[in-house]
Length: 213
Image 1 (cartoon, helix red, strand yellow):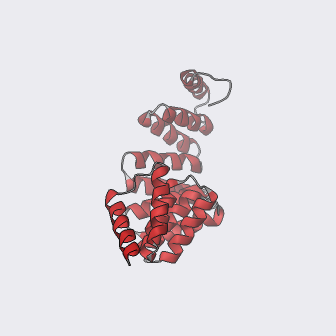
Image 2: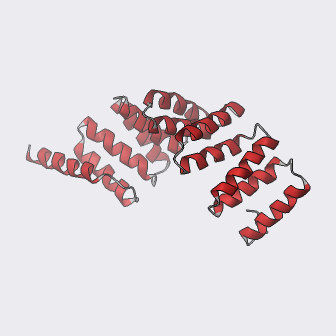
Image 3: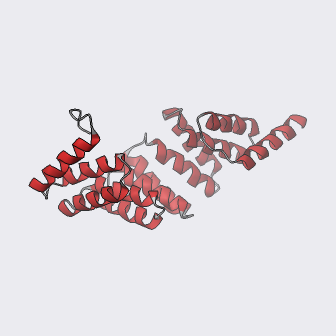
């Protein structure tokens, strides 16, 4: 929201007035969508972003926002479609590639996820969410070392990113480094991540067995 506005409703009203004066301005539609999203008005935001891409079919950011709305309502295929549209508009835009990788993981397609995530990281090597998802994808493919490498890169860049600590814990567990796995899981919990209780129990058993051995 522009700094001169203290009230989001005032900002939205002004945007709607500007749109009435110039219905073809994609930026106004896009900004309206962002403002409506901030209020939790997903239906209104979706329509605004659709109006934005009608006015400017190559507005990649609007397709990404539409993908996010689809994800919010559990429509993985819709999310995938819109992010693919965004990537076609701007091939070097890392965000849609990261989202595409995430959706492929949700669909149980880690190989496709890795391919998309490599593109995201090619254009933004510091893309922490993509690194964390890559860690999950590598682990799903049995590449434990690759999973650990991606997760460590993520937590080095953003130490407070809890999902990466969880992924690092899972990979260390698979490697047999149970104490490190527990330390990473504790870090994830400390940062607010909902680590599976069953996994924590497995960790406790593995660490106890290691101590006895």
